[in-house]
Image (cartoon, rainbow, N blue to C red):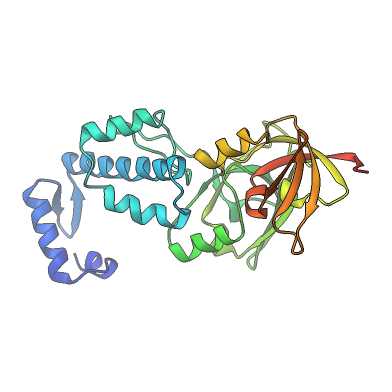
Amino acid sequence: MNGLTALLEFKNTQIVDVVKQMTINELILFDKDYIKLTDQGREYALRIVRVHRLWEKYLAEKTGFEKTEWHDRAEKMEHQLSFEETDKLATELGNPIFDPHGDPIPTKKGAIAKLNGDALPTLKVNSIGKIIHIEDEPEVIYKQILAENIHIGSQIRVVENNNKRVVFYAEGEEFKLAPIVAANITVESMEDKISLEDNRFRLSSLSEKETAKIVGISKECRGDNRRRLLDLGFVKGADICIDLLSPLNNPKAYLIKGTSIALRNSQASHILIQKNHHYAG
């Protein structure tokens, strides 16, 4: 009990009242000095996790809220959705297995998919893999990862790993992280599946004289933003080059299918390309 009060940022009297109520509701029980979930308590906890992660998926796919807002907004919905409303939400979202951070979403029956990956700092130099999970807590570390513009689904190659920093390449860019930050990133090994495509870059890296072909849109780009890019013609196989540059190079206008379309670098970073060997005239 003392450990619980030290961990949670609430008054001791509040924690005692909640523990008392959870005991009355048969959600927890005392085993000597430990508090344990009952079977009923575990079922309730999984339902709360299910609602939270489904709501984060909803926010990512159906709204324009920033990533930093997803967690707090989902926390507010955890105890509000009924069983029926939760199941309806899951159906509307296509019964997703993972939330936008890569965390598994419990099924209606409480089954949880397994994350088959390793923390980035544990990977050896020259390891190749794919980012499958980015932990969103603590918030200060999550914001650092967001500031680096690191994406779920990106293929990476580790080039340096020591007690001072972890350095890796992804989509034509180099990233340097402190080990404590890199530990919040989970990577699935791809050594035995496919080799890293070295000629895969973010559209934001395209220079004025280069031409390229679109190979896809990052999984990080979801919902309406993804549909908008596809509607504008940013589809796999389309040829693309820079049409016009603004004074600060942000935004840039790209020529695609005969149309000039302006994108900010943050938007262009979600579009993956393969650069051609020849250059625009």
